[in-house]
Length: 195
Image 1 (cartoon, rainbow, N blue to C red):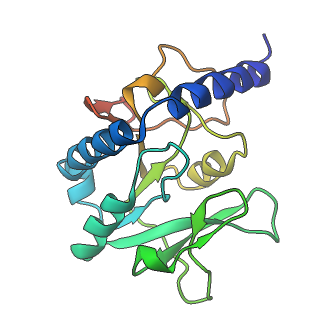
Image 2: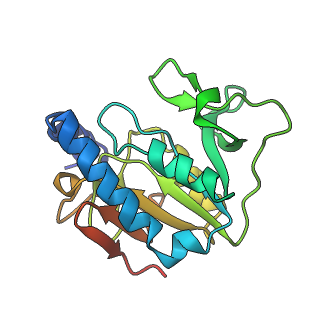
């Protein structure tokens, strides 16, 4: 089967699986995932965390964002740039209260020309997705934004947050699909072997 069809089928399957998780279970597992993340060396050693705001059944990230801001880490969220196709940049925030809702339901910072975040050797990026394998493969939402960004910044430590039900033994991938370094679920931290 064609890899695009395989990914499309996996997206549909895991979107249903993820959406079936009750809200209270998602909240409890998100709290566990936050604790596992905040106990890692790669989190504690990072100066900047590039992270998304979890919505629509994704692992909730607001507590992670607030915890990172509290200890004075630079926190930046993605913005899809309208002028250039499939381009994404990260913009710094000082509070999750200043985010605006995107037409696809995501929450984004408002780019003002002064808050563009620059990544460096101590930047940790948290990537979203629908399904992951323990070797670091990921199927996202199909836009390719994170794969493109990570391909241009392949020195960054990259982690994914997901529920155990979003793990699969095998995830289809090609050369443009970037691997995660770590996957964190409510069961713990999985080192995917890239670092």
